[in-house]
Length: 194
Image (cartoon, rainbow, N blue to C red; front, side, top):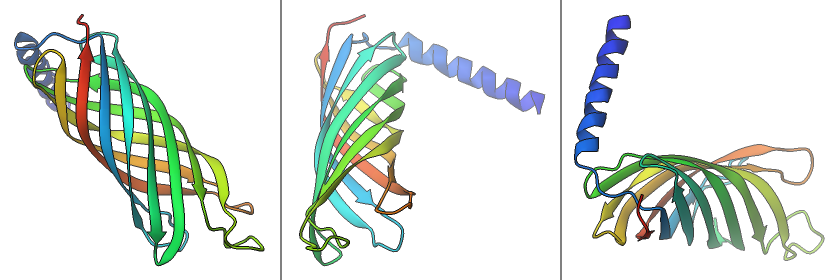
């Protein structure tokens, strides 16, 4: 077991040195504008559905590897499982991002925590079901993506994939976790250098 750990550590250290030899300048800040596709799995007997939207993220890089991210976005789903629900959600997430900068390519991983403001135009428990409901929920996203530099000021993000979870509190004393998948792609603007 110790031999495996030492072997893994030496391979990781060698890869880190190789990455460091061909790295590009680290920007002070990066702003991403992204299209977002979310596969929502509400659970509790409800079928899954798709939601489309977008989000912006701002990353302040503390150093070449570690950055702090603010991720703000929204998505919308009109008809869900044959019902005209008009579901809208706004997410606000914050947390660290670990970058592996190498020449033009910057793969990264992140762990974000925050909340979600969810609202819809249909409430089955209301006297008039057309009356909507809104609520604030805990949200978190774990995942990563890839930025490809075009020059010192621009990059494209061909993909970012996150496990996106929300803690929903429907009427009554029920609480359940939605296990969602979020895919996004977009452009990244870079400012300054470290």
